[in-house]
Image (tube, rainbow, N blue to C red):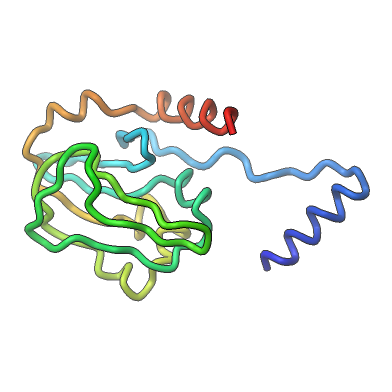
Length: 155
């Protein structure tokens, strides 16, 4: 599939036909975002964490996810695992401090869920929140969208 897309893109370039590239990745309104492209959804004292559609799009096909242990502490802005793709390996940072209460075990056998469903089936960890005030330092959907557009424009 990828080779067909590459061929089509090269053919279009050769023929000087403009090619519609994938638009900006989806951003979910009700989530908060870290500048390293992780999202968090907080419900009461529980937070679900994953990587954004923008991040998975830049990573390419995810082939492995390093998950933390249940019970492990996570800190706002600090790494708790890694995502390995065909292009690169990237740390996963926590948008919120707390204790890991659940990990998405399905990612062990199906890491591609991060690509196909980053905000739903591709969640990474659930955390018992220890400091909800940290949410104030995160970006909302509008700020995150602008952040990504500026970041992509600088590359």
